[in-house]
Length: 197
Image 1 (cartoon, rainbow, N blue to C red):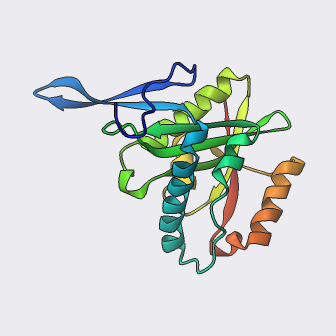
Image 2: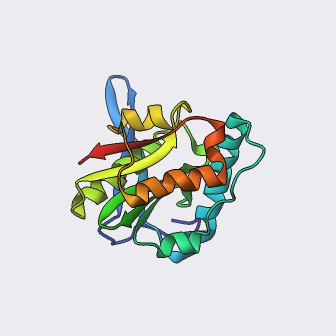
């Protein structure tokens, strides 16, 4: 398959997504997208994807200060799971989703897609795969925190079934405090969202 040499993995997390086009009233598959569990050799690309996605958000927010992306090796070692989406043309990661397991609860900590790979449904595919995996692992809901007014933040997650919710657990309240200490709440209203599985 080329690229980073990932190929199709036999992991139960590996999912194939087919994109199709209509030609002459018929549908035909034109690309296959692979979503799979992240491996240690994905760490560098995961960090680069997050940095590129953050740069787009920083630009839209006009944020002169922004915390750097988290360490990808550390991210891969946290409880929960990280799924990556490989580019169908070169088998190289173009997006990832990270779901934390915190005290038995699932929290979508990060969703990032390379800006040049945006508007192709990759983010939605990653969210769908993350929710499917959460369901398979026995979670009954998934939470996240995001900006209320950025189109690819709260409005996007709402289209995936998430609803605004109130932080209740110590972890959730801690996230609100962390956002305030990092200063990211000054760039727009932050909110928690939850989807029931």
